[in-house]
Length: 511
Ligand SMILES: [Fe+2]
Image (cartoon, rainbow, N blue to C red):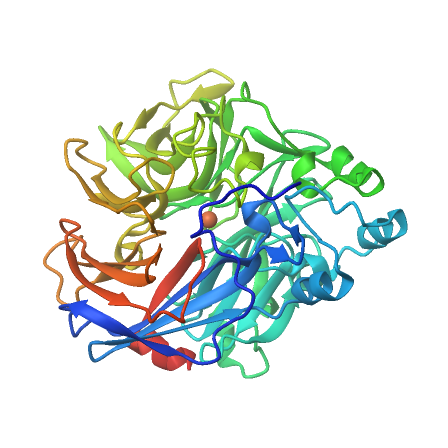
């Protein structure tokens, strides 16, 4: 495909920084904001005259902002993955979502198919997450995870979940983290086929022979797919105090298309299709016993990348599970339209299907009076005005528990903004709007060490800008700007999806 005009802030970085650079801080950065913000996203798309068309195919670039004593230092690194070196050395593209490279050969493609742990799958460009408060991992949605050196951002270990937990063929980029730093994550079991949930125990790290996350993975259970040769796409899942909540949704991946794609020179993305009539199935697993709740639940068709939070609630002696998500309209959403060149242009902005909204599903657990085969679960908007993606909450304190506030980024409607809504009261909303020529991403909540309320703290937002990129620090109560750390001219960032803030304690343990 020919190159089209793109938003100039959708950068394609050809090289990483050589060393950290100091940002110039304006405003009053609170002294207690001390630690490191890590970010991950697609940093490089272009290779001579070729480029990866889809947003999800850009080569991983990890970024960090070190904040200490009111000073901010920025550093980035294009991860030295095998997919990056193969793309450069072979002068051909190895896309997952973009159209296939016409220069590939049938033999080469079949070789890839018969080698399930092939290297092109190691572009871990979606998230960067701590494990057991001691280790750092870059994640995507294939079978690879990369252990990252927090200082240099170099890859220190390439790990394949498929080699450690044979039934799991993939691992997603949104694990839930328990208090001790253990993960609950999920992946694809292609034999069942089904959605397999795994707990990666972080306490095992006390044994010095256990030096990586995958060595202590234990399967919780696997939810069989509703189809024989097809699975729903999944990107995250919900967690309440007692249940894992999984939404089997309208975007499907056909195994038959996938098998033939290697002969027909199609990409993984070409094997996906939307079924907008597919009622979302809601599956529950008991976290303690691993038992799958036998009763069936469903709600309206939708598409979801991100769960916001989930919790159990008693009403008149009956228990229900509240499941909050950022949902897209299944009739209009098309994952293939998330093209690198179209991001933040009129070709995508404001288009039908690209208005994710915070929505709430209520799953009734007490079903003594319900006889139907599958229970319909009510779904409603938590706020009908603001589009909200890349959600963030006061996670360490309120994940799995009742909460009031969610923060997020509006990245599909002009003007772009950081938004906050009260999930208990849709009259309460806040928005920080950006100028044209600025692109924000996921806000990361940092709690005040002596909090007076759930939302007492700051939001850190990495922003790309026509002039100079910057780290924005907002008061998380009302989204007013309290400081920004502006990068020098020579330091350019790139779009990021996700990351986390390592406070001073975790930051020390990581290093
Ligand atoms: Fe995500």
